[in-house]
Amino acid sequence: MTDYKDFEKTNVFGLGSENTAFAQYFIGKSYLNPLTAGAEGVPFFANVTFEPGCRNNWHVHHAKKGGGQILLCVAGSGWYQEWGKEARSLRPGDVVVIPAGVKHWHGAKKDSWFSHIAVEVPGEETKNEWLEPVDDGQYGSLGE
Image (cartoon, rainbow, N blue to C red; front, side):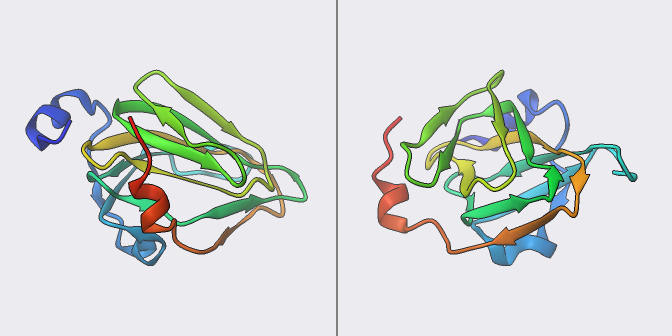
């Protein structure tokens, strides 16, 4: 889904604002539309949209207890990959449960816009650790 106007019709949670606060951890442009305020003990939900070819760096959601992330795919087509495993193709309706401590990345396919609802799972002493970018060669070799 390379045409933004077509994508916008399916992205029911909206584009939001350019994700400049975390731009250093992304290749390409991403957009963030917070859906909840994320109070203590309440999950934070945000619609994250990736332009074609955009992906975040490898990263880990750490927690002493609980924590992690859930991705609810809502529009377009993307990728999810855990360290040492094959990349998984993502489409609307797919759900990815990422336990705390798992090194991973996610983002759009080369030729498609992509949105997912990112859910930060509450936990104790949670923090994100941003790591290296996904290698261009590795990303470029991913199929459909």
